[in-house]
Image (tube, rainbow over the protein chains, first blue to last red):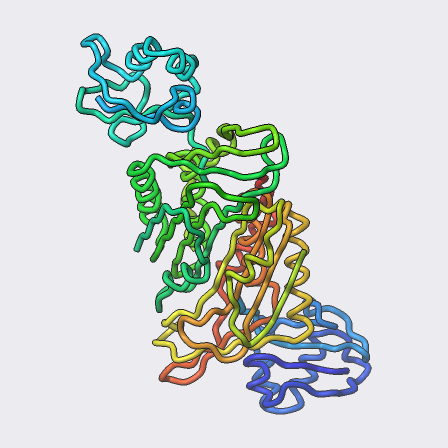
Length: 83
Length: 83
Length: 155
Length: 155
């Protein structure tokens, strides 16, 4: 699975993307975030408050209970502030 | 009194302005139009349907029952179509 | 700040936008009215704009001032061309600058709605069949009346 | 026709308007978003725009297509700048061309409202105190939600 980070999510984690294979029990966006929190202090900070996090699967906004597959591109970021 | 004509009102009358002194009984925009209708066939055509005519006194839109004085600048024209 | 111009010459939207910019302006909305190919009846050769000099400037100033007062606008521009114009020529420009976008959009729309009913300009169209005066549009009357009952959206 | 661009370079509004003109276009509404001097807290030194390449283009295409379908627009342009910008620099341009003005205004407003909530761009502000990420604005959420219940005005 390819995972991308943007804005302060990336600043906390320290890099903008990573590739990883998740354990079988990690099936949704929320479960992926919980799993990522174990990776580093930066990840833990980034995913501390999931209400402040938005996610995309294959470049479409998705809700946190969306199921994932291992070939997905998943992105985590704050609410958008463009325009 | 200075009287100005615009758009098809002017086309009917054949010129764009005239100066005239009205008889005492001509006191409102409507009465002025009635009086002007007697001046020529063109005037009569221009003021045939007063519902199609708008007026300004001293460069402000006014209703047809507005009273006039001899020093006023009065203008007659169709509804505006700019923009 | 308000600037009004009535002129034969064309205008440059980029230059107008630049002239409205400042450190407190975050949003600039513009409107350009353009001569269309089709007249009320037929294919259009030209459009001629006539106005009531003196009254037309005053009317535009008054509309711009009302827009400024209604919304929180930092700058307003109105340029109305007069004379003979061809298809695709610009007719009118309105620009509104504000800190926020809703005020800028509302300002442009307000000015265009009232310009259509309260500014002494008249259009005549030249087609193969000759020259006709454009007649007033009921929906323009309704558009400007709608503001009397509508509250301004704040951004 | 829709054209979307995401770029570091500035844009020229006059050129964009020209590219939207045609014989059936009578109304062109534009919006320019500009960097203001003031940040959420302090005087602003610079603003940096980041985006999610690929997804950001798709999101803008989708918003433009929805605007086209909603109103009767003949052309839509969206340009979003990315990278480091200074006060008074342009951030975003939206242009909508239509036969009539109400559709053009509605199109611009619709696109800006959804761009603020549905396009993956993020702003960070540099001030004397350092760099902060701009937080989402509740009123932007409300502005885009309001379209779901609102009927499009026809001109």
